Image (cartoon, rainbow over the protein chains, first blue to last red):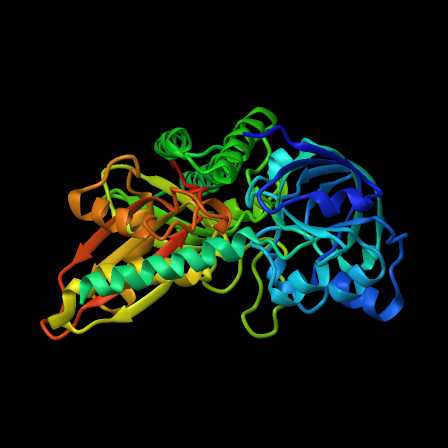
Amino acid sequence: MKRPVRLNTPLGDEVLALKAGDHVELSGTVYTARDEAHLRMMKDGIPFDPKGAAVYHCGPVIEGSRVIAAGPTTSARMNRLSGFLIDAGIRALIGKGGMDKTVRDQLKGRGVYLAFTGGAAALAASHMTLKGVLFEDLGMAEAVWIIDLDRLPLVVGIDAHGGDIFENARAKAQKEYERYRKGLA
Amino acid sequence: MKKGTALSLYDRIAAATEAAAREAVIFLPPDVKRALGIAAARETNPVARGEFENILKNIAVAEESGVPLCQDTGVPVVYLTIPPDLPLTPALYDAVAEGIRKATGSIPLRPNVVDPLSRHNTGDNTGEGMPAIHVKPGDRLTVTVLPKGAGAENVSRITMMLPSRREEVEKFVVETMLLAEGKPCPPVVLGVGIGGTFDSCAALAKEALLLPIDEMTEYEQRLCDAVNRLGIGPMGMGGDTTALAVKVKTAACHTASLPVAVNVQCWANRHATVEVKRT
């Protein structure tokens, strides 16, 4: 495996050089956001500086001032809710399962989608320090948690040039399935 | 049975349920860890290798720090075996629910259980018909907890096939994974129920997830190979392993029926069994 690219927030044009499938290690600040936080931000504005920021699709388990478990949630639920963030200067969306063509196009020339391993919540928490919370009234899973990352291991799922490893895997699976069906006939 | 004894048995069942829930969400069964280790060693796709590395590290971190593997600690599916001399009473069901309530606070578990229509969260992972409790006779009193996450449960499927097209069971299994893509957090374990009735077939598919996954029959291996040829890979990003295992359970069925159910499980095929000491 190639050595992972080290990234720090705030992110800049260095993300444009990344290619789908590259491994990266992200350090610095991320903001968690799921469905409800996106809706609130669309209505009331983004409560942090979006320039070069990273948004993590995650509903963590928090106990006191500690992140207990913080794996990614399914990013596809945010397919229709992410354009305004990218327009505002956000450079990285982080989650699991990939996103659709709309987001892939919105990211072109501007930012990347980074995938973290689904279910690896204990590992994620071991790279995290809790810094604060916004929209706390939305409840633990939906609030925006401000988290400091120390080299979280991620993979570039969608790059800034339309490269998308989820789409590649989907196309291959479809092709293999057609071949399989023909074999049965 | 004297009242005092009944009470303490109630407490012991609750404690066993809590202990099984704790073990299940923090420690993966040895057969699942073995299967993940073997798949990780065989994987050739560099992205998939990275995913396996994170999965194996995550298992170690959860064990060392005693925290749940995944923030989706699921809904509680519970299997009980009851010895012949123990009456099956409502108190027994209450004791299991009590154990789940305690586990929700003590581990902690994420409160996931809601009313299906109002979506009101009960806050303690119990509710009407939840935990889902399945009872069978046995030699010993045991409690098995299988916490089931939503990502994988949501892509599970059931069908009533034509008995004359039974060769299409394999196709249904492969198709289920094609439609699921990365959503169930692959590499998955597929529990397949074949036969029985509409309801018992789905139950068989879930029970199949409790079988050891590091051994497969020839038929199970064939299904597993067919799924893996899709190349969906860990988290849907491509790779050699899409399914760690396919496990099949069968039951006799109507001559005009062929029910087939596929219960999809994420790589964290969590379950644990604790025996309740009678004395």
